[in-house]
Length: 211
Length: 380
Image (cartoon, rainbow over all chains, first blue to last red; front, side):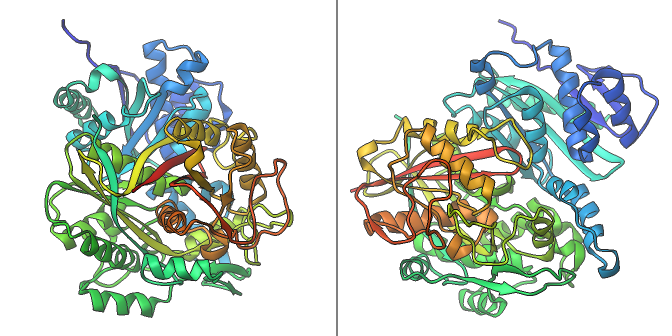
């Protein structure tokens, strides 16, 4: 049987594509995220409070779920069976830098909880879980590079959880407000039966992101 | 049959001591590392913190042969793990050994205060992890679990899974965090920090204290039963409720508890070691989750009154101290607790209690709606 390819979205500060189809847009950088939110999402004002990492992960996920046509909440069984496993190399560095600026100078010292909370990279997994009511596993792993073999191995491991039937998996990085890279895909148990094949599929997605 | 995952060595480095045994003995005797600070850097609000003496860490590094241009965070990871790896007697340079680091903020203090001879990129968590792996000559690819306060439990769960997959024979799981003005100012801005030693689960609790600790477990996969501590199972669940506040129904923690209880022999459950940060919301939430999971009568104990919240180390250090306590038939006193302060009357005490049983559950929750639990069992 010919097995299907993975559905995926790739997104960076100047490019966005869904299953390889390029989405036309006008804005770049952080403004691109707002343009995509207004044009394709629009019903989640919490978006505007998010940091760049969360915005990028959130928008990529929304575009992906729309493409797949998955209903928003799903059954109780479904929301307990959907895990979120994200990877990145810069983690919350963008938010860290923004927060550091607020505490660096004694004369200009104004730490705020709204900025500080985003100095944890797993917040993006929480934002996605809240939007979709998913109560399965949520994890953020920091790697040196988007190494597909390493990601495929740890995604396969995540299916050892008794409840996990599918995973929203992806990569999300941001070093500055106008600089971000993300991909998002959904993998199912059958996709990790052959970890080498999963790695090859992830590599195709990363190639699209790098183009 | 699934491979059995055993803890074969452990270490805790904290203000209370530089070995697990020394830490356990101090906690058993009621000693705490918490102290009051009036200010730090640009912070002028008083707070209570458990802080490691830098000279002790430098002395320990010299004693253990840890030389090189390392940051405090990297030294902290190394001086805990070197002791545990030595005690385990494993060859950490083998590609059959997996390293997993658990931290929330790693080298973030480099952003405010660059260190001579340390590349700026070491603020990236995987770069710091690579420094540690290079010390051991380990050829693997770095992986850092960064799930806020639950990272230490998640790192053990991920190690367990990686070992069960057959790809690795051993996992060195190291957790640590440095309490820099970055983290302290952030928790102060949340108004989550108490200026007194914290009082977990108490009716007058005023908030948490932060703390510094580095802790390591070395896990081994084997196909046969041997005597020792077995990591039986674990679970990670999201509340899907709020990014910085716990669920009012304790949903994620409840789901985690229900998952690990599937493998738990209730008559053998000695206690649940809770998160118990001493914030109003966390402890209330945990009491609800414990009640819903049918654990209202099981002894509950929290260690934040001795160590503060040690973030990336918490899940590992608190698991290790729980192992020592079970072997000592002891439910450690929840330091700071005196009067019931949650809706559901969980079995918590400010005094040391006796217990029976060979199993314990470690429970954690954190920002991002994250929750995690694991079950350890001692096999005679």
